[in-house]
Image (cartoon, rainbow, N blue to C red; front, side):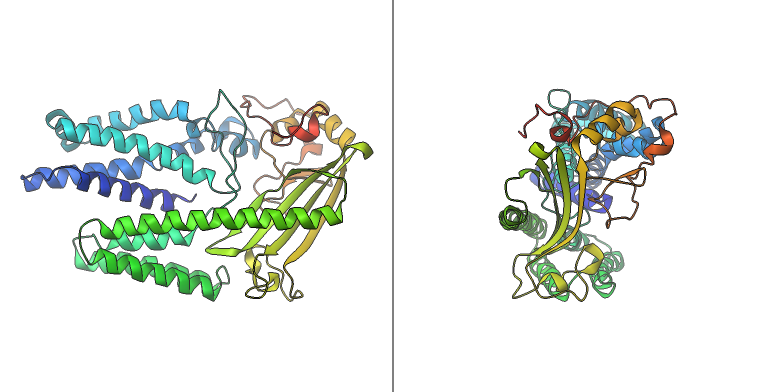
Length: 409
């Protein structure tokens, strides 16, 4: 997820942690405790993304692909990150140090907030099509939620409004709330959101604001319930989308083996989905990658109405599903390229939907066909270069294509 979402989630965590503790009769100590818990939640919810400092270890694009959402996004390496965060708070913030020295309950709350914040970061990153591998080194597979777009205004709107209304300063409170509400309006005007999505977001904001005005933690809890409810809706919608795609693919490629169906949600829109399919026709020694867009309710919003900026089909015919791209490849050629080109082999430790065109490899989860993105590797021009190192040993998402003995788990 984006770092604004991570920050808002962390702030909500810190706010709830502070309100769960007994009230401190000393106003100064109470203020310090709340600030420390808010800061701990916000920092812990962003800390794993410090792995961006590791990306120079490998030449682009492998540095970003293999080291971002890498070791810092695992449960094992969350432990030293928690220790580092608490150590920095202790060393650099005298008020936090005194709080943790003098108040055992607050000290436990700070530790718990740091630990939960780290886990929430990994959990949110799991929700989208990019993926994480939290159980490394016991299990180095990439895990994908395929449920929520990587930048989701539902989280911004619900959590942002709830937290904005807790800001003591009136001017800052309404400036914060106004900025949060202006974002989806701007996105809608730019074509990133449908008007129906905007209406839904404003309704969520109104409900959260109503509950927040009733006092206590009601606004934050309502916002969290809204976020969890949205994730649940997306999970159900994603399941229905997969069933429709499987049915359409069975008619298009009878007898093929479906290896993967990556789904990319449209922001704040459970009806529209971009998707890819990876199939293996092993008997013919070939595989196929397809891209498409699907609407779960074409009578309400067909694929032509899905936002074009995220894969919708402009001026397309009213339909539930539109196939947009197909690329066929040779299994023998793919395996030979992996064997002979170590840069491409490293790239395969990230790529989930590989497209090989004109000596370049691109994971087309993240752009339109034929358009380079942050994953694009010009492997043909790198064949004579020294092999990249260090290469993290993540399991290759497309090991099912590379190893003839491999079957999907």
